[in-house]
Amino acid sequence: MPDERGLVRPNWGQAWHGRSARADNGGMAGRHAVSILACALATLAGWCLLAVAHGGNESVDAEGHHWWQHAVFYEIYPRSFADSNNDGIGDLNGINARLDYLHWLGVDAIWLTPMFPSPQVDFGYDVSDYQNVNPEYGTLADMDRLIAEAKKRNIRIILDFVMNHTSDKHPWFIESSSSRTNPKRDWYVWKDSAKQNQPPNNWVSIFGGPAWKFDPRTNQWYYHYFYPEQPDLNWRNPAVERAMFDVTRWWYRRGVSGFRLDAVDTLFEDPDLRDNPVMDNEKNAYGDPKEKDVYNTKLPGIHDVLQQLRRVADQSKAVLIGETWTRDITELKSYYGAHGNELHMPMDLMFTTVNKLSAVEFRRQIAAVDGAGGWPVYVLSNHDIRRVYDRYGDGKNNDQIAKLMAALYLTLRGTPILYYGEEIGMENRDPRRREDVKDPIGKLGWPNEKGRDGERTPMQWDAGANAGFSKAAPWIPVGPRFAKYNVAVEQKDPGSILNFYQRLLGLRHKDPALVEGKYMPLNENDAHVLTYLRSYKGRNLLVLLNMSAAAETVNLDLASKGVHAQRALPMLVSSSNSKAIGATQFGLGPFGVYIAELR
Ligand code: NOJ
Picture 1 (cartoon, rainbow, N blue to C red):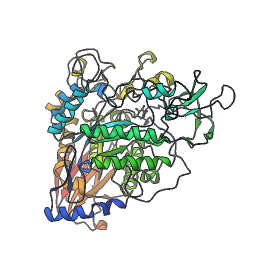
Picture 2: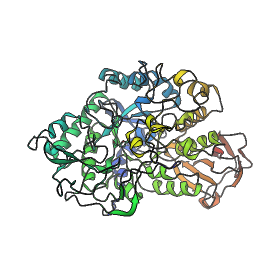
Picture 3: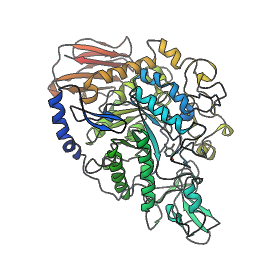
């Protein structure tokens, strides 16, 4: 997980080579055939109601698409979004107070990163109680209110399901570690020393150091893929499965609409605990030997768990999104399940590894995901991945580039997940000194790995103290240049990144071609401009994205795709120096965006 500037950071596990590809997601079509027919009869273009789900009506459109395929998701890191009680830490009531903003922006669903009780070693990804709210963030009543208030604005809430591990302060682990004969002993992965005082095998933790911690009380080691404070659950134990599935049922009953599944790749370990292959003479940011995670990631058992979890989710018409760090499309496809019966949306995190503005590379990656047979989900950054502004900005045209990237992931066929603050052009603020670092991996890996604080800074609401996040000093300093890049200032500026996002989302909600339309790449040899159509029912929406710092002229090659156009009606243009010269010829300013309907 090297933290080179400009590189996406996480690489939770490496590809496991032994597993074969599963078939594509062909089951999807059949499952919806009857609904599609019913809907088509009911209405040609609009929506029809098919079933009543727990929290309201579940709508399926004429193409058989569900709410989560129409939705724009917005990821909130609760600690950093809005602080209602002025203790410097964001909270649920703070989020509640900002729902109108999210509604204005055009958000349909919020993914809350973990807000459960937790010692906060990994800022919530070390859960000590799955059925409550961390007191720093509020109460269960606040959560219920948030769900209800969001629903009034047609916004759904999904939670982060930390499946692979709990906190070492979770009562399950406390019991498990109390004795070798405790009934919960087998809820975690305990093993004897390999040799005297030696861990059971060579596995290293993705967060540095050995993946085993010795417990002198019972003279055994427990396994942790992440921090030692995050012991791995033993998913081979049916009692663990039952308890964890019940957690999801409990939240569905409270009105949540699904889960983002944390670290799915890491649920299972090789039963024989074989050593991982080590890469010769290569060290990671923490100085450990680099390993291929062959025996502790992507083991086949994952798919059975996902299928069962999907059955539970389906009973509540809930959605499952996976944190899936796949090496290739074959692996990504496997997470949809052979019959479309696993994850609704495995995140295509390979998209985040295209770390330069390259029309060629994005075109290749989009084609692969679009052709994978499932419903794509596009992400550019999140609480583990450096912000877009930093990764793609050239220092001169950053605002144009932020708009360009917005236009990319918000006009593709698939569901976009927007990380809070991207819409205002927030940038990373990495700690400058080791003693300022909050994220433990940043302390351990300093200076190679500075941790993830930089992408977790407080949301910038206005130009006032602490960017309007809190009246108290925030738990982590606010980002640079918040006085210019904030919601209040940008809402008033028609040319701002925020207003561009808002217009894009408006377009996405209004124009069926952007949701239903087929993705059709054009001018595939163009190294600078990424060009595609979104085609639906004979309408063609054209998207031109200039990924270069030079002005470009594009002559559309439509004939080879059997498309004809007499005019281009502009729908969204990022700068005045991008324009149509004719129906099939366009001039684009540096990093310009041009979205038009071809007639
Ligand atoms: C992935 C999460 O996104 C990350 O923030 C966390 O540290 C690890 N999983 C461990 O839960």
